[in-house]
Image: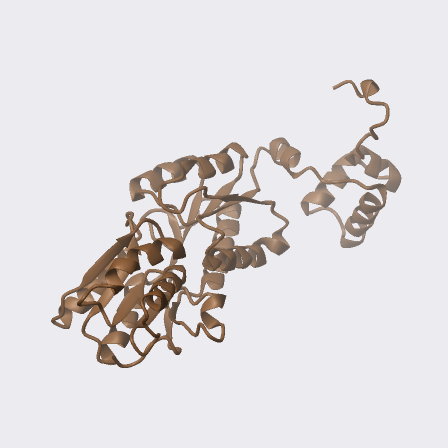
Amino acid sequence: MNRAAFPGRPRPVTQEDVARAVGVSRTLVSFAFRGAPGVSADMRQTILDAAKQLGYRHNAAAADLASKRASAIGLFLLDLRNEVYADIFQGVREAVGEARNRLILSVSQSTGEIDRGSVDSLIEARVGIIIAATLLDSDARVRELAASVPIVNVTRRVAGVDSVYSDDWAGARAATQHLLGLGHTRIAHVTATQYEGHEGRRRSYIATMENAGLAPEVVIADDYTQQAAERAATVLLNGTDRPTAVFAHNDEMALGLREAGYAAGLSVPEDLSIVGYDNSRIAQLHGIDLTSVDMQARELGRGAGAAALNRLATPDTPVVDRCTEPRLIVRNSTARP
């Protein structure tokens, strides 16, 4: 670009400018920004102070190209409307914040179908690793992606790929057993289209009901949102043999069930008990008081961030397979039938 054509635009401050201001070499300045050995703490601080005074902005992308090593961390989130992903994001930020790695965010355009474009955009941004929460794709496809760029899965397990997840089977079993323990025998489960790696909650519910000698009833909504669950529950709750309790795939869907129940003239929990999953902040609000399974999303985010940093630093480290134990939090949305 010919800067003479833009006389009003100031020239960006370079590492050479910082080096001249401090009276050291540009190489030493580069080492200081990268935290490389060979620079004393006092000299590094002097260089950083001079850079700040001059208005220098470190070009991390250019530094990656120069070192031939990608350090940026890509974070894929399935749905920011669901608070659990905001909690995961916060946990990742806490884990990588001190490491100075760039965090590049990409959010899916859809919650009901595979969205590979959002992941591809991170690959095109030349990130060094992708933290994925949550990929709606087959295990084979995830492993294929991981062959081109390292991936840390969050909320699901993929064999052979770094995974930080919660035990969905145990969580769904606890939710269903809680309703059974209250005396409910007509318990439905509302979920959405299941993808490989995301079937644990539904399968656990079915197994728990069958082990109790009861018939499971699974309702499939269009997607995992509150609105989709409300539409799906309208028919379910207006039938002649409606369930007295419903276990929802997540808190968003549980809120949709709650609204559909009120629209049908049902009181929660007197006429209808509802259990959600995620233990989101809205579940804890007075007036909502939703019984929910806490998957400790923020802790999952911290674990994924730590795994990503470790993978970047030591590419040949063994595959991470970290499973956390969920907890059922009982509130006022469940009672005896």
